[in-house]
Length: 241
Image 1 (tube, rainbow, N blue to C red):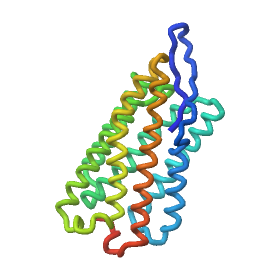
Image 2: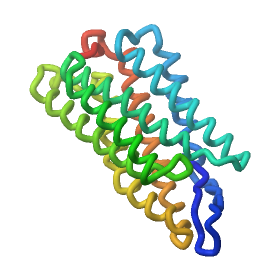
Image 3: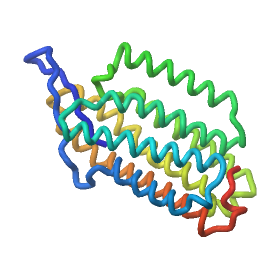
Image 4: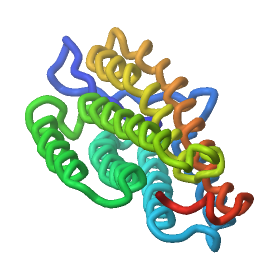
């Protein structure tokens, strides 16, 4: 994930834009969703129902969003507003999938989460982190919510017969992808928001993206593993809960 960060300096109230330099792992937020899209096309005829809709929407949405943010970065155009919308998009799509995979249907918890998070996002943009700032508050909240939902999925899985062949379940790999990436992202989002708010600490915050790039690689690799389960394991082990 790369972005332009708007930071106020002591010398002027006018914001200056600092560009994020390339890191060793490159634009993993773009090439990893692209890899996942290739894998999805490869197993497309084996995927059905909710999981097909979820994968297409999330992978395509991630690829499109981060491709645009990186293009804007190369053009030296501020792109932080896109992260605000992507965070909301991710929570809506992923939490819907996890809650449905966990309980077998939509429930009031999902709607309560989305309404609450939407209100929180509007408040955050209005009073704390405008569209020209990095959305550390909502990103952190998004990661915490997905982490908790993922843990609930794992807990429910241990109570079902599917635990006997959990490694063959695509949904297990998908949820694990968000469990791991969310757990790693929470402290990084908090620290990054602090560092980018102060020009003196910006270089330290910039170094955090080496780890953030790694979380994208881990997340989409696990998603790819889950998608390959559709092709290489029996159909009864590849159905949604």
